[in-house]
Length: 287
Image 1: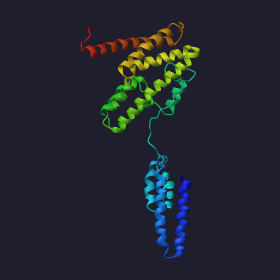
Image 2: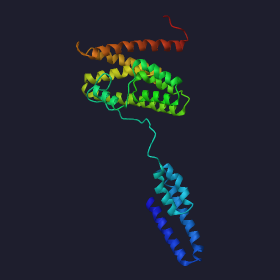
Image 3: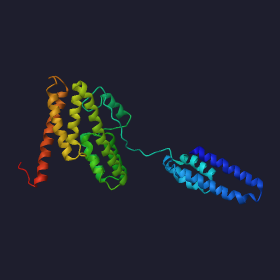
Image 4: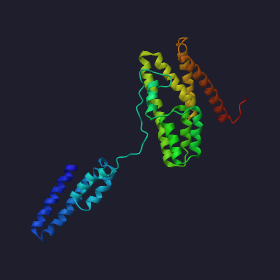
């Protein structure tokens, strides 16, 4: 494409040189030849707009007003006008499950490294309320920083903050929250499929425990998922947690976290079942 435009530019420049050497009479044949060559080059480039960036598509008609050489110059110069600094965006990441598992999905060294290089600062339980207050009443910068904290250090317990941000008055914050919600759903599906793929051939207890805890965490706390999906996740997590509990030894340090997760799942199932009953029947259940 660029080579064809360069060829048109060379031909146009040669015609211009020939017209200058011919004197005043050269303009009589150079003007229509130049116009015809410029239109032909523009039509060819219009057929390849999909390969051009936005600045190049804008620069193309500007250069076409002068000729093929100007079109070539504008196309080559347009990428240089784009600033090197880009806005930070949430992208879909391929979440890998490491061989060594911990209850929270990260080893202590990984968590420490991320905190030290300031990529993430996990909020304490009493700080979640502060972040919610910032999202409700803070200025634009404060709301953005609160949402950024919830996005980068996302755990299902922080999903309520993203739900709040989805109704923010600022369009940028709403877009960031929507992208975060999509990322969370993708991460859950990706982590679940990878764990299931690892469990299928070997049935490792470590992977079965990680999958059960993953389903329990999202089923109980991920407010970004529909209520019906959270209920199904809790029901599946309950079965898997019961299976894993029967396989853990008495001295296994994971038993305490597993028992807490089982109790939380049972409460979530009861709460969800009651709320669905109220919604469907419109009758307040007896306490």
